[in-house]
Image (tube, rainbow, N blue to C red; front, side, top):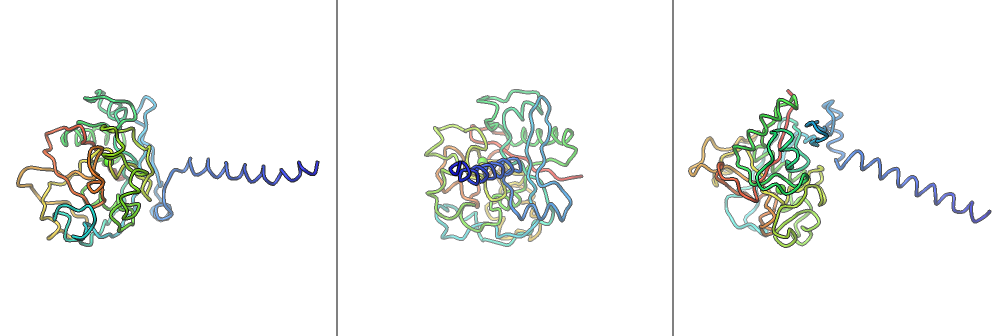
Length: 283
Ligand SMILES: [Ca+2]
């Protein structure tokens, strides 16, 4: 009997820890900063869009704020001057961002089409052109009742950094990357199902690696020298007609998966390592 009495507090403690775990799992990974912003703005901190057929898309609230966009010349892994100069950027309005890259089942639910190179329901939709990604956003807009589009390059980096100023949202040491990203050394040379690695501090998955992600902006390597402070929308055109991609991907080195790394692609070319995620704002 005395033994049983001694076990009781332990049983209660285990139950409490388990309950806390379930609660955390149900609420998902979002920061205190996002919860505070949600309270102030009277908006839900996460949204689950119903795409029909039991398919949903999770969005997380990105609070407005300021950050330093770009990287200094000495940052480890930086190979191009297009990431400089580092400059202050202000994101003036809250928005929602997809917690993951758009998956193949989400793409199928919204467009009614099975994407080329289908690899599995929870795999990110790849081999997709910028134009197809934009079309998807327009179609989703009708179902979501919100303005849905690709993120601007500034919104993408702001959300990726999630308040951090280091090369990656998990710090400056690339050797921790496999906990957060699918990249050249751990991807088995293909895109992997979404949300299997750790999220960034704002609950966004695969912001480092897995697939490169299309942004709204035209690509201009010199744009940062004259970027406006508030809500930069990118240049009005691109010399070579290229659009921005961010995030690094499954067949790139860790340095290409840094928060500040920039990439450009022909908007008509769907490649195996190009995908996207959406942003949405209330109307
Ligand atoms: Ca990615």
